[in-house]
Image (cartoon, rainbow, N blue to C red; front, top):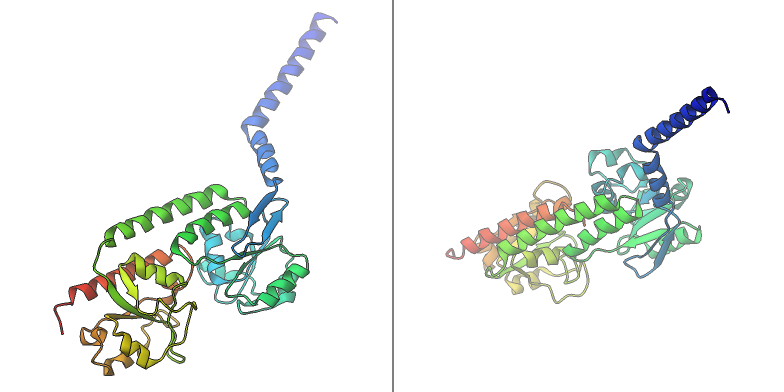
Length: 315
């Protein structure tokens, strides 16, 4: 080959090499790596003990509980949610997601029409028969049931894994664990405060030992007066509450406003909680949802129980 030809060929090869180098530098290699990761199979066991396999991280997710929606946003997977149940209202972007009924009464046709590659449900909140129907339709379902505060960190990690956002899930879980340990450290060794937590008035509902709010009470150095009850949300009587003589009564209600029925206890002046004016309120979204914001509610709860300790010199 003439010298000029060899030069041109070499120049062409060097040009191709530079182009290839630029392709790598501008993300070509990262794209290949991401593609490989996206195709990696995910095999996990959900909180019900069922095995779930995904050929790749989910790209179209339907959330069957408001707290599931919130946790997905917390790991950066909000843009992947194509359907959610009523009251999925946090963060604000969640309000724009298409609705598929309520968590206790799903619109199965609406769920199927969205063609999700992952459905995340709530084991104790969604009707088992409806979940079974979704699985019968061939939809991959992951059931979540965080009964302890520590479970929220694990849920953050799992949702990150399922949505291809493992790093964000791990980072969110680490922040959650750090804040939880700080709360535990602050209230460890504090004198116990016998606490009655009221969910609703009619019927009069409280929390049993398996409810996550009971765990929050423990973090604050409180003692759930109905911890012996195995149900998550048992019904009790006014007489049983009075007999338990709680030192603090904490209510949630339905919205951010303190429920009027909390003051109904004032007639029972024999209770320590009433005699010392220890009738407290924590917004339900901060204490009844299994999300990172539960620590906001727990911190408020801890503050209330600390107030109760400070009033022990009263009646």
